[in-house]
Image (cartoon, rainbow, N blue to C red; front, side, top):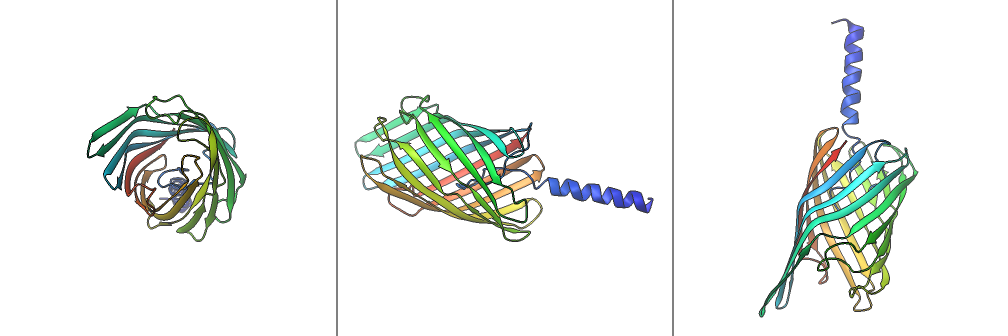
Length: 261
Protein backbone atom coordinates (compact mmCIF):
# COMPACT_ATOMS: atom_id res chain seq x y z
CA UNK A 1 0.00 0.00 0.00
CA UNK A 2 1.12 3.52 -0.74
CA UNK A 3 2.66 4.97 2.50
CA UNK A 4 0.51 8.11 2.29
CA UNK A 5 -2.67 6.07 1.88
CA UNK A 6 -1.60 3.82 4.74
CA UNK A 7 -1.07 6.84 7.02
CA UNK A 8 -4.46 8.30 6.08
CA UNK A 9 -6.17 4.95 6.73
CA UNK A 10 -4.47 4.69 10.12
CA UNK A 11 -5.60 8.20 11.03
CA UNK A 12 -9.17 7.39 9.96
CA UNK A 13 -9.15 4.22 12.08
CA UNK A 14 -7.82 6.13 15.09
CA UNK A 15 -10.51 8.80 14.70
CA UNK A 16 -13.20 6.13 14.53
CA UNK A 17 -11.85 4.43 17.65
CA UNK A 18 -11.79 7.74 19.51
CA UNK A 19 -15.33 8.54 18.41
CA UNK A 20 -16.47 5.22 19.87
CA UNK A 21 -15.72 6.60 23.34
CA UNK A 22 -17.82 9.76 22.93
CA UNK A 23 -21.15 8.19 23.93
CA UNK A 24 -22.73 10.50 26.53
CA UNK A 25 -24.75 8.15 28.73
CA UNK A 26 -26.31 8.83 32.14
CA UNK A 27 -26.12 5.08 32.74
CA UNK A 28 -24.83 3.32 34.72
CA UNK A 29 -24.94 4.62 38.30
CA UNK A 30 -26.74 7.40 40.17
CA UNK A 31 -24.44 10.21 39.03
CA UNK A 32 -25.20 12.63 36.20
CA UNK A 33 -22.59 13.51 33.56
CA UNK A 34 -21.96 17.07 32.38
CA UNK A 35 -21.84 16.09 28.69
CA UNK A 36 -24.70 16.46 26.20
CA UNK A 37 -25.59 14.45 23.09
CA UNK A 38 -24.81 15.94 19.68
CA UNK A 39 -27.42 18.24 18.08
CA UNK A 40 -29.84 16.38 15.84
CA UNK A 41 -29.32 13.03 17.59
CA UNK A 42 -31.63 11.06 19.88
CA UNK A 43 -30.43 8.71 22.61
CA UNK A 44 -32.53 6.15 24.49
CA UNK A 45 -31.29 4.75 27.82
CA UNK A 46 -33.37 2.10 29.53
CA UNK A 47 -33.11 -0.49 32.28
CA UNK A 48 -33.89 -4.03 31.21
CA UNK A 49 -34.55 -4.75 34.89
CA UNK A 50 -34.10 -2.82 38.14
CA UNK A 51 -34.71 -4.77 41.37
CA UNK A 52 -34.32 -3.57 44.93
CA UNK A 53 -35.04 -5.18 48.31
CA UNK A 54 -35.67 -3.52 51.66
CA UNK A 55 -35.80 -5.59 54.86
CA UNK A 56 -37.22 -4.05 58.02
CA UNK A 57 -38.36 -5.82 61.20
CA UNK A 58 -41.45 -7.77 60.17
CA UNK A 59 -41.49 -6.35 56.63
CA UNK A 60 -39.86 -7.16 53.30
CA UNK A 61 -40.32 -4.97 50.22
CA UNK A 62 -39.32 -5.94 46.67
CA UNK A 63 -39.53 -3.21 44.03
CA UNK A 64 -39.09 -4.18 40.37
CA UNK A 65 -38.89 -1.71 37.49
CA UNK A 66 -39.03 -2.60 33.80
CA UNK A 67 -38.20 -0.02 31.13
CA UNK A 68 -37.03 2.77 33.43
CA UNK A 69 -36.27 4.98 30.43
CA UNK A 70 -34.53 8.27 29.64
CA UNK A 71 -34.85 9.82 26.17
CA UNK A 72 -32.41 12.59 25.26
CA UNK A 73 -32.49 14.82 22.15
CA UNK A 74 -29.60 17.10 21.20
CA UNK A 75 -30.78 20.67 20.63
CA UNK A 76 -27.41 22.41 20.26
CA UNK A 77 -23.75 21.87 21.12
CA UNK A 78 -24.56 22.82 24.73
CA UNK A 79 -28.21 21.85 25.29
CA UNK A 80 -30.17 18.58 25.24
CA UNK A 81 -33.83 17.90 26.07
CA UNK A 82 -34.98 15.07 28.37
CA UNK A 83 -38.05 12.90 28.87
CA UNK A 84 -38.06 10.10 31.44
CA UNK A 85 -40.60 7.48 32.55
CA UNK A 86 -40.93 3.98 33.97
CA UNK A 87 -42.84 1.64 31.67
CA UNK A 88 -43.87 -0.68 34.51
CA UNK A 89 -43.30 -0.84 38.26
CA UNK A 90 -44.25 -3.75 40.52
CA UNK A 91 -43.82 -3.11 44.25
CA UNK A 92 -44.64 -5.88 46.73
CA UNK A 93 -44.62 -5.50 50.52
CA UNK A 94 -44.83 -8.67 52.64
CA UNK A 95 -45.64 -8.81 56.34
CA UNK A 96 -46.72 -11.54 58.74
CA UNK A 97 -50.33 -10.70 57.89
CA UNK A 98 -49.95 -11.08 54.12
CA UNK A 99 -48.73 -8.98 51.19
CA UNK A 100 -49.80 -5.93 49.20
CA UNK A 101 -48.88 -5.07 45.61
CA UNK A 102 -48.72 -1.69 43.87
CA UNK A 103 -48.09 -1.71 40.13
CA UNK A 104 -48.49 0.35 36.98
CA UNK A 105 -46.97 2.92 34.62
CA UNK A 106 -44.75 5.49 36.33
CA UNK A 107 -44.80 9.29 36.32
CA UNK A 108 -43.21 11.30 33.49
CA UNK A 109 -40.31 13.74 33.96
CA UNK A 110 -39.42 16.50 31.49
CA UNK A 111 -36.29 18.60 31.52
CA UNK A 112 -33.07 19.70 29.88
CA UNK A 113 -29.33 19.86 30.42
CA UNK A 114 -27.22 22.93 29.68
CA UNK A 115 -23.45 22.42 29.55
CA UNK A 116 -22.22 25.75 30.93
CA UNK A 117 -18.50 24.86 30.83
CA UNK A 118 -17.10 22.44 28.26
CA UNK A 119 -13.66 21.23 29.24
CA UNK A 120 -13.64 18.36 26.77
CA UNK A 121 -11.50 15.34 27.65
CA UNK A 122 -8.80 17.33 29.45
CA UNK A 123 -10.44 19.87 31.74
CA UNK A 124 -13.40 20.49 34.06
CA UNK A 125 -16.95 20.47 32.62
CA UNK A 126 -20.01 21.83 34.44
CA UNK A 127 -23.70 21.58 33.56
CA UNK A 128 -27.12 22.47 34.96
CA UNK A 129 -30.08 20.09 34.69
CA UNK A 130 -33.63 21.01 35.84
CA UNK A 131 -36.34 18.31 35.74
CA UNK A 132 -40.10 18.57 36.30
CA UNK A 133 -42.01 15.40 37.26
CA UNK A 134 -45.73 15.21 36.43
CA UNK A 135 -48.06 12.83 38.34
CA UNK A 136 -49.48 11.03 35.29
CA UNK A 137 -48.60 7.47 36.28
CA UNK A 138 -50.79 4.74 37.69
CA UNK A 139 -52.42 5.76 40.96
CA UNK A 140 -50.75 3.00 42.94
CA UNK A 141 -47.19 4.02 41.97
CA UNK A 142 -47.52 7.76 41.17
CA UNK A 143 -46.06 10.32 43.58
CA UNK A 144 -49.43 12.11 43.45
CA UNK A 145 -48.27 15.66 42.74
CA UNK A 146 -45.66 17.52 40.71
CA UNK A 147 -42.07 17.94 41.86
CA UNK A 148 -38.93 19.73 40.65
CA UNK A 149 -35.28 18.67 40.83
CA UNK A 150 -32.11 20.53 39.81
CA UNK A 151 -28.75 18.76 39.36
CA UNK A 152 -25.42 20.51 38.74
CA UNK A 153 -23.13 17.81 37.30
CA UNK A 154 -19.36 18.29 37.32
CA UNK A 155 -16.93 16.12 35.33
CA UNK A 156 -13.20 16.20 36.13
CA UNK A 157 -10.83 14.19 33.88
CA UNK A 158 -7.87 13.00 35.96
CA UNK A 159 -5.98 11.13 33.22
CA UNK A 160 -6.60 9.24 30.00
CA UNK A 161 -8.22 6.46 32.05
CA UNK A 162 -9.41 8.02 35.32
CA UNK A 163 -12.24 10.54 35.74
CA UNK A 164 -14.20 12.04 38.62
CA UNK A 165 -17.89 13.02 38.71
CA UNK A 166 -19.88 15.11 41.20
CA UNK A 167 -23.66 15.48 41.06
CA UNK A 168 -25.01 17.84 43.75
CA UNK A 169 -28.83 17.86 43.74
CA UNK A 170 -31.61 19.92 45.30
CA UNK A 171 -35.33 19.27 44.90
CA UNK A 172 -38.83 20.33 45.81
CA UNK A 173 -39.83 16.70 46.33
CA UNK A 174 -43.40 15.40 46.53
CA UNK A 175 -44.76 14.78 50.02
CA UNK A 176 -45.36 11.13 50.85
CA UNK A 177 -49.12 11.76 51.03
CA UNK A 178 -49.14 13.36 47.56
CA UNK A 179 -50.28 16.73 48.88
CA UNK A 180 -47.53 19.33 48.70
CA UNK A 181 -43.74 19.46 48.45
CA UNK A 182 -40.72 19.57 50.73
CA UNK A 183 -36.95 20.05 50.55
CA UNK A 184 -34.70 17.18 49.52
CA UNK A 185 -31.01 17.49 48.82
CA UNK A 186 -27.90 15.40 48.36
CA UNK A 187 -25.66 14.14 45.62
CA UNK A 188 -23.11 11.66 44.35
CA UNK A 189 -19.35 11.50 44.10
CA UNK A 190 -17.89 8.86 41.83
CA UNK A 191 -14.74 7.78 40.05
CA UNK A 192 -14.45 5.69 36.90
CA UNK A 193 -11.58 3.83 35.29
CA UNK A 194 -11.48 2.93 31.60
CA UNK A 195 -9.42 -0.24 31.58
CA UNK A 196 -9.81 -0.96 27.85
CA UNK A 197 -11.24 0.66 24.76
CA UNK A 198 -14.66 -0.83 25.57
CA UNK A 199 -14.89 -1.45 29.33
CA UNK A 200 -15.32 1.10 32.14
CA UNK A 201 -15.48 0.30 35.85
CA UNK A 202 -16.92 2.80 38.32
CA UNK A 203 -17.49 3.28 42.02
CA UNK A 204 -19.57 5.94 43.75
CA UNK A 205 -21.04 7.11 47.03
CA UNK A 206 -24.55 8.59 46.99
CA UNK A 207 -26.65 10.24 49.69
CA UNK A 208 -29.93 12.15 49.93
CA UNK A 209 -31.60 13.95 52.82
CA UNK A 210 -35.40 14.01 52.58
CA UNK A 211 -37.32 16.42 54.85
CA UNK A 212 -40.79 14.97 54.29
CA UNK A 213 -43.31 16.32 56.86
CA UNK A 214 -44.39 12.72 57.55
CA UNK A 215 -40.86 11.86 58.69
CA UNK A 216 -37.35 12.97 57.81
CA UNK A 217 -34.84 10.39 56.60
CA UNK A 218 -31.45 10.04 54.97
CA UNK A 219 -30.68 7.51 52.25
CA UNK A 220 -27.15 6.55 51.25
CA UNK A 221 -25.50 3.83 49.19
CA UNK A 222 -22.14 2.53 48.00
CA UNK A 223 -22.33 1.64 44.32
CA UNK A 224 -20.34 -0.36 41.79
CA UNK A 225 -20.89 -0.02 38.03
CA UNK A 226 -19.63 -1.68 34.86
CA UNK A 227 -20.21 -0.50 31.28
CA UNK A 228 -19.35 -2.24 28.01
CA UNK A 229 -19.34 -0.17 24.82
CA UNK A 230 -18.74 -2.47 21.83
CA UNK A 231 -19.68 0.24 19.29
CA UNK A 232 -19.72 4.00 19.04
CA UNK A 233 -23.51 4.22 19.35
CA UNK A 234 -24.51 1.68 22.02
CA UNK A 235 -23.63 0.38 25.45
CA UNK A 236 -24.63 -2.33 27.95
CA UNK A 237 -24.30 -1.81 31.70
CA UNK A 238 -24.62 -3.44 35.14
CA UNK A 239 -24.90 -1.76 38.55
CA UNK A 240 -25.03 -2.90 42.15
CA UNK A 241 -26.03 -0.62 45.05
CA UNK A 242 -25.55 -1.46 48.74
CA UNK A 243 -27.64 0.51 51.24
CA UNK A 244 -25.77 2.29 54.03
CA UNK A 245 -28.71 3.54 56.13
CA UNK A 246 -31.92 2.01 57.47
CA UNK A 247 -34.01 4.15 55.07
CA UNK A 248 -32.16 2.84 52.00
CA UNK A 249 -32.94 -0.40 50.13
CA UNK A 250 -30.52 -3.06 51.37
CA UNK A 251 -29.54 -4.02 47.85
CA UNK A 252 -30.37 -2.92 44.31
CA UNK A 253 -29.31 -4.60 41.05
CA UNK A 254 -29.72 -2.91 37.67
CA UNK A 255 -29.00 -3.89 34.08
CA UNK A 256 -29.63 -1.73 31.05
CA UNK A 257 -28.77 -0.54 27.58
CA UNK A 258 -28.06 2.77 25.82
CA UNK A 259 -28.56 3.38 22.09
CA UNK A 260 -27.72 6.51 20.12
CA UNK A 261 -29.63 7.26 16.91
